[in-house]
Image (cartoon, rainbow, N blue to C red; front, side, top):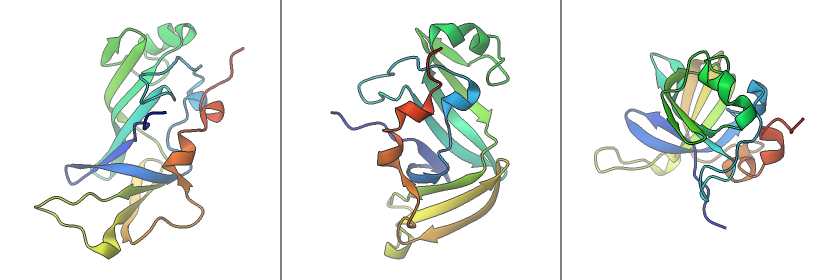
Length: 165
């Protein structure tokens, strides 16, 4: 099996992989969506979601998902996410800069760059959101116990999508 695409969180203009979350930040079934198929062999769950906090508010920097034919019209009409998608390619849709009303915690792996080296005890960063507002952030040396790791959440296709009717 190929490596599955991570979701990312943009922090200070740099894209960092989300490695854990509590709860899972995006569950298509909560929007009433059926599984629309893989986006690619690197994205069998059928979506990816990249996030950023702008003015202390969480939003999807980019949300791309494969849409089941039954859901396509309601997505195109803006009834699912409050507006039509920014891009449509076949059965995949893409939104940019879409508000996200998430209550939970994201753990990201901080990636070093020559301009911003990462100290060993700051390998990860925790971001806590309430109703989409950033309420806390702090550096971490490791992922806290009990957090759902990214590797296990990409394998949860059965709970991410609404079962067929």
